[in-house]
Length: 483
Image (cartoon, rainbow, N blue to C red; front, side, top):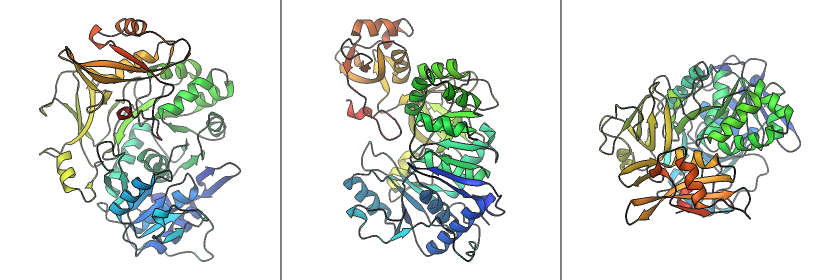
């Protein structure tokens, strides 16, 4: 019996996985997924921990489901990892095996590790089902952080946390077995793997992975049975650009039941462009590797553009000041802290970092800064380490300035950071990708634009122009590379 995937106990005769690559559209139904996953589970039963070479293929999905059924923790590996990062992850997590698609050439760092090629053809005889329900406190995944403040840390995500967050999202999004979730997200992060693969399977619905994101792929998938779209801001920005000339794409987005953006704030200009073209609002949610999902705009609630919604069922969320005292006033900037069954169990091999991440009452310190409105909705203003600017006695969130800059017609991309200032302590620096590199907007022009919508102390004091902002695989701006 599967605690994470009840649909596999009595598999319905419907698609579970649909993966598209450059030439084929591979569909695996629930009875076949059950057979494949049980076969993988049987092969992994004696393993202590396995890595997964997390390509955007059905092999990754089948391998992960099989490992979870066997109660074997999974370490998702980014196939684009550099040699140093890969060596750290493998040395820290010490997997006994790596799961791969057939015929994949692995890098030298994995040469000493036994490989298991995940099959997509069911065995001739039905494999035995796993013997018992897995302990919910056992690690399901070990997901490595981005390592912005040192070597990446392995986040221990339990079966309990996965189930809790997916069930809370089912409540918030009215997520059912009738939904077919469309996305082109990488499968080595929480967004693509937990929400985008394990989420639909837990509901008994269908995963439709595009292989690689494209606006045409989204259009075709949503026009052919897709009901929910998961994406990151970079993807929605491309959709907002394309939808103005692609009427079929506009109709496909308008016909979706739910459009969800996450992993970074979606700029307000892209919200408004998509709303104007489709009549649909994008739902944003907020989470991280250590907490899975904490808040979301509800599908059955009022529009809340620019916020990440309210606390999910079962999750406690609060804002605290610099001394850790809870903030009661609305619109005060504070650090987000969370408690609940969605939280991770700790950092692998790092009891010191685990202890530092929590306060004495079990609240996890996210390091993210936000405000809370009168409805309980949270508006993220940035990371405490990179997005909170202390200038002239004011606390300024970089996110709200970025949204205003992006609304300027001469700005294609924008990021805001702090720089030292002998008078103010810190000054606001705008990093801008101009729409026309030959005619970039001036500092005075951008400053006046910001002052027209925000308080004067939030205006940029300096502007630096770039050809493109540095981003990671999920579209997050790498601000430490700007400083």
